[in-house]
Length: 185
Image (cartoon, rainbow, N blue to C red):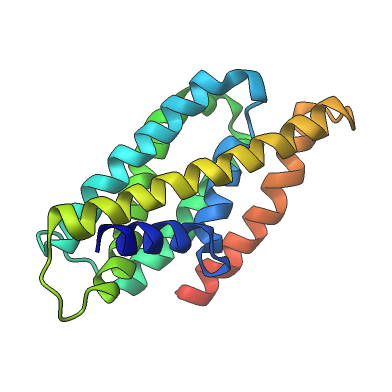
């Protein structure tokens, strides 16, 4: 059962129907370069801790927020991160805190997926929640590694300046998240 829920967590985060989470990760790392891996590590860690907390609280019914509100807020977190990337560079120093707060929202979204997976099954911290969350984390690491390789390629071989890369990633992601907000409202 551990492997089944690990696989479900991994599959969820890398699947096309998790595009909102993938684009959130893209928006998060768009401001960094490959050599800033320590900053990226702190940002991703804050996201992981935060979404793990709300995932656990939501899946155990301690925290209940309707999924349509959660999905709208997930789109908002993406939009706001892109706006910060483009127009609020002084806020970049607070990326760890901001991403942690936004991670709380994303954890609620992950819980909706996990809840659907074990309908009728008995909940277990070790057999369902832990492997699902670990699967999400491994998937995020894979996605982040790919995104950082793309950023590295754009900087090193195409010689694109950092501000161009930020715009190249943030503008389309911002437009997509605005559409999702409209769609989910």
